[in-house]
Amino acid sequence: MVSAYERYQTVRFKASYYNFAETLTDPTSAYFRIWNGTETSVVKAGPTKSATGKYYYDCHMSCAVGQYVGEFTGTLDSKPARERFRFRVLSTQI
Image 1 (spheres, rainbow, N blue to C red):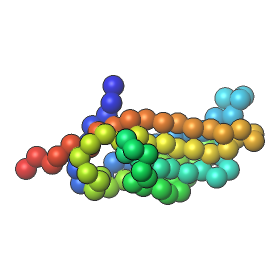
Image 2: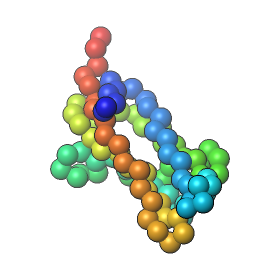
Image 3: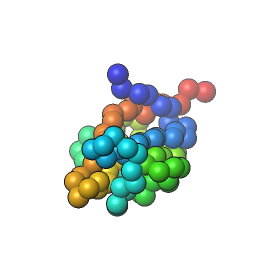
Image 4: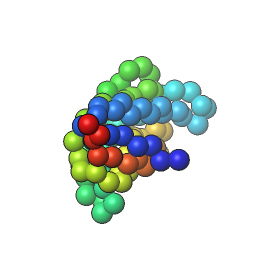
């Protein structure tokens, strides 16, 4: 199921990084980005660390109405780590 958010709402996206022993671990080069269907980046930023292996990014949905892909990336034990998700931005109802 794809999440949906109203335009101009602030949303907190979260990710957890685990190593192969299934222990929460901080990645090197933690990164967050959002792009549209044409792979044009809308947001590129470093996420905020809330605890070991736990990161978040507060995003104000000021982008156009449509479908997007979000991604947290990093490197764990010299291997790339990635979590992707899809969401929609809806027009604001007043």
